[in-house]
Length: 278
Ligand SMILES: C[S@@+](CC[C@H](N)C(=O)[O-])C[C@H]1O[C@@H](n2cnc3c(N)ncnc32)[C@H](O)[C@@H]1O
Image 1 (cartoon, protein in one colour):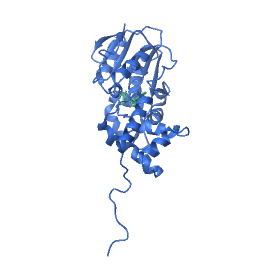
Image 2 (cartoon, helix red, strand yellow):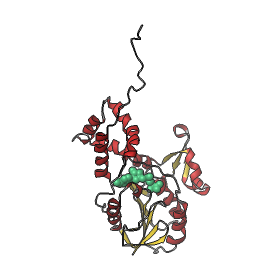
Image 3 (cartoon, rainbow, N blue to C red):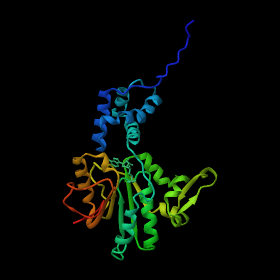
Image 4 (tube, rainbow, N blue to C red):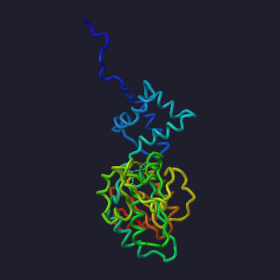
């Protein structure tokens, strides 16, 4: 006797056809500058598949129509949040923090506010690491940090300043005791960045491929581990826009796996991944 119900192991899994992948890839490139090769097809399926299941959609074509419709802005932002890679850590690439401490803070102009922009800050670990160092070294001297990202989801997390306790290992112990609180009650298992530090970092949404925000001039710009997703032309545009907000003599810091060779004539190398505006 045949069973009345059959188990379909593929139930709920929708195939991403090449043409649909190309549509999503091109949209992502147009909006964010992020380039994706066909090797990223499984990544798109795993990250957007849950949205198709959420809406009960039977194809990526329908999802594409949804996010490109005039009333689809919120879901489009959700898709962008899911498609961006937000991996980050406190004090990632520690040599940059040594550089900040030894070189920049000593050559700071007394009485002048030191201004730093973390231009693809993800969930906030990078700007909070910078803030801990500045608060320690500069004490009462004036400083400001602006931190921006394209993804609203990571910005929300960054603003909350709440991180899983496992992240403790990334933070030097004196910073942990000076700037982090151990969560209790509903925040058990989490660490919270102290309010006095949270209040000193201004988070905002900014898309690097759009015109630079009117934020005035910065002394240092961090643009780390985001250019790996851009092609040469996009990199050139992004760096040029950011450089318009960096003062002459200011420093531009990229990820250790990134280089600005052939990207801009306005910068000279100081040490690997650290540049200075001429
Ligand atoms: C891998 S994280 C790097 C975070 C941090 N800078 C670090 O080095 O740890 C890259 C971040 O770049 C952001 N991003 C990607 N494209 C962007 C764009 N066009 N404009 C602004 N942010 C973007 C992503 O949302 C993501 O949070």
